[in-house]
Image (cartoon, rainbow over all chains, first blue to last red; front, side, top):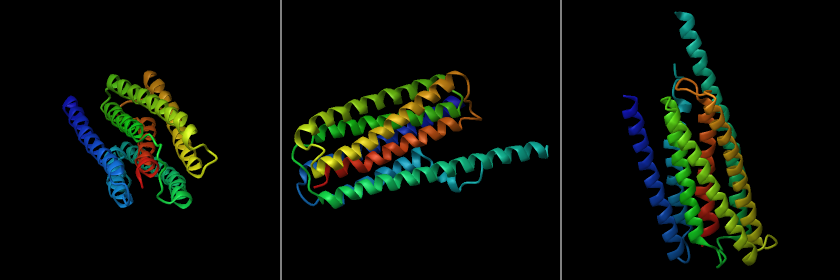
Length: 69
Length: 188
């Protein structure tokens, strides 16, 4: 049962990682191809990227969940 | 029975307080990196020098993201008492962090030739990457400590705050880089 749970959570982490890689690649492509005025695109990509890490890897929601018993 | 329940509640509250403390620390670090990022725009606007090694920046960004995934897996493993996977993943995180630092060193070597620290962009570049690399280094030391503590059997599925705290800090270092990378290498 534990093995299944670990595998499920590992897969979950992998999906988040893939999403982060896609965001990084999109940032890179826009950064090198849009020669001017790409600032807004960078913000629009960096914010969801950081949110993915804060939400799924850092588990920020634990802060407002009741204490574990 | 009620004493057992009270003890569990106390442990739960204690863990919540530790988490709040760590998040307050992370928030204070956010102000530091926020100030550095705003300095970049204040001193340099959105101008970008021509000789930045953007592909290398992308590679080290992906390496750092891989290290975050490994750290996440290490934390999951210890939460299920899988000591072997915990050690493998945290050691992988340390190795990836070392590769990241080598990449930053390479960047510095190139940067010294094109925008020395005396130039405006050089000041920003070396300060931001230097402070971030210092955080990576301190995170690596903390990761080495938790691997050693894990080897001594100090963590299990009921008690792994040390791992959780260090891994959260590691993810924060990654979050900071998610903003530093486009700010230094891509914005134009």
